[in-house]
Length: 396
Image (cartoon, rainbow, N blue to C red; front, top):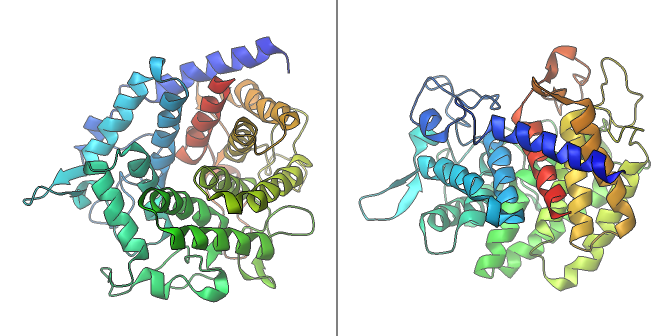
């Protein structure tokens, strides 16, 4: 990849990210969080007070966008204060101090509930990363961790997730949704929603048992959902009971979980995880197109309905570039990560925003992966990982 093309892609992406976040007149945390009428433009949940009781401003859409901004700050602290302040404004807007002086999520503003499932815990990873231990962010991370791991904690539906929604036969993975048993209990999406938070917080407080469980969960996915073609099924309950679609974004969630978890895993687990990461990337690279982009359904030819898709490609760029930077992947992989990022900037990013982010695909055995109305612009599941990939380009 020519250096000037890569540099141009970074400049173009920086302008886009700033327009979407720190320079936006509508995506302002203080305004959005203090209004029942406003929402972040990338957030597909679009806050619906009185209609549903979860995933308003605390949704994982916002979690991945703001975590991407924090990644930018960490990659370039000297020039990243505006991103830090934006993330702080978002997190502060979700917190409130109780009469006893402790801190908690403002449930009305955030929309967090303890019985929804994996999606409600993605933003917890940002509280954990932002925390310096004994502060409001750390207190909230402690609470959310207890909701997931404490056998004495009973949630608002009268259940204990770590006893009832984390079965041994599923590698102690949590069900993706908790209100009722989904057709497929374990989704690749849910690995990312839960495991980076659990591993980082577990490492901070010295919870070796939780780190053992994280390793077991990743092993279960590798043993159960890995297909003969080197890619991973979208979801499943066991080797013979899987959702047989190879959705690039689902695999992207799983790969991002791996590289975020590996930052804190004990050394004795790392050789197995590095081998799993290489196997994952090798399987995906077989399907990267000449422009660097992956199709929505990775193993099928690109068409008008199975388009080259932005969210999964952004995730793959982040996974590969971070894996190389951390020394978990050989330097020879870097070119593919850069190619993916530059391909997105050149082919999918224009004045309208980041295009062709697929809205959703059901993990219920039906195929809604090729509905053209589901290709959106500036949807958080794509914009967030794109910002994360941009942060990795800054390290270069």
